[in-house]
Image (cartoon, rainbow, N blue to C red; front, side, top):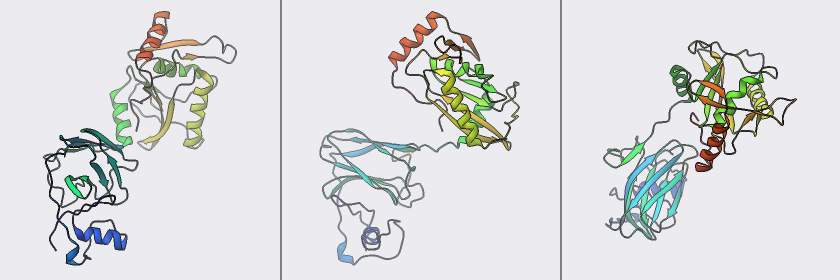
Length: 307
């Protein structure tokens, strides 16, 4: 059986007929195996020059594919994988995006086709014998960074405009610690790491009198009851040198100014801004700038250290 590419309209595409046979008749999409179809099922299609695949950029969460050419209209771009398969109908040259909720699927292929005619393709599984040189094929795959490594790098970088360390978690009596959360929300966002000594180097860890989930909930509840309006925050727990730390990520606020309130003076919040590695009371011009700058970037809630 010749190793020809098999492309069909409205159905998954395959690098050779044996894979198609196993997928349709055995439910096996692995692209690996010995069982094949009768010889007379093979059909060969030739590429045309009117549309082709450009750069392919794969991140841990999505794939962005550039499609080029003068006759892209009514072409179909298909992502084939062992566990996920989807397609996009194209109207013109440009970029198409495929969300990757579970990362790049195994045995991943891209097919560009029109009806039953294949126009271009890429095998983008680094382990596949079909793939070849990804860089020469214009395929860039970002290797996801482990969250643990990211946090260790964050600690090693020390405090700064977007990072602050605390040795202990705040309490209702020490909620003023959260003034930095308000300052981050009034600016470009930032990260607070709890369980780090004031020397900014030593990982002391947090008391584990409660499960990490309870500690995370306690921290977010304190933010909710102290900072107004409530900014978008995420709390995560990690272990560094077998010691528990909590990381609170604060996104740039979309509704500044953000202030710190107290139970007896919720109608008179205090406002703060971040300068260098320190948090300061905000001046009127600081609050005006926060409001104006957020108007220019409204809708950006990305976290600087998400992951």
